[in-house]
Length: 143
Image (cartoon, rainbow, N blue to C red; front, side, top):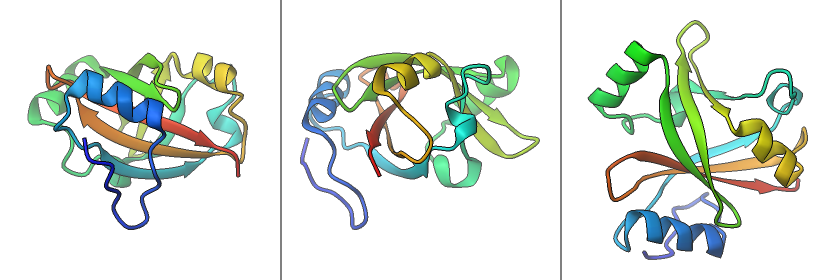
């Protein structure tokens, strides 16, 4: 996988890139999704979810089948690679009432393990593994 970044896209941490290569194959280039400043509501244990703007997140990334499964089941199971190359199982949903995408399930465990707090910058990429499953990569940056 070439370590080529688009303008405005940050460099991906090496362990993250290596795990994506293992999961997706050498030819897969992750798609830069964007950054999100972590808010207090993203790290509250009682909420246990990350909200991300719907329009900016996955324009053209979700397949018709994935959209249908999200509509029927309400969520899609996805894998997420962290900046150290660890792999997490998250639930991915679309809240149509507020047009936001939501990551939940192991999100709060990720927050606790990486000490994610309000004001940190979360960098997000998406990619497909060798089974064509939608996956994400999250890197937390101290601001």
